[in-house]
Length: 225
Image (cartoon, rainbow, N blue to C red; front, side, top):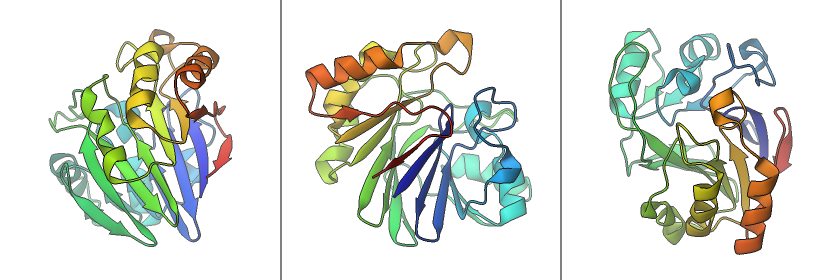
């Protein structure tokens, strides 16, 4: 699997002909590595519908026909915006993907879309080919972050570290201990002043306290898993 960091919490996971885009906040994102017009996802997965995660979902889905996957109330709003290709698993639900699957798991956060639809945030456990990736979504530190790794061996964790709106880099070290992924890639930091932090310090702390390796990607950077 090729994992490309597109800025903020947006990642593109590519395995064969499957191109999964997570939380496509590109337009208006000062750290975006690409424009929305430059991506061609087959699937769009959403952790929640805050503006900095819902992003370009509706426009991308209409242009590409990508399947949009997210929590039921969120996907209900997206369907009302004219997106026809949707799937709405709730927390604990698993959806089959070409060559794999995605399962929604809890994230401790709040969530109301810009249009006012309240819904429950999620993390995403994604399996493509032989690789399992856990995108924690926007979350505070809580003990259930340990549970996905008790069901599946986690190759990569995509983990928020910026603080203010999510857990900070210090709590994220404990989260890395709980998650137990082989590799951790930090995200949701440095996009705006309130979430500026030191990713290299996070890397040093995680690698001192856990067996996980931390890969710090600049927007546009890739990691092969």
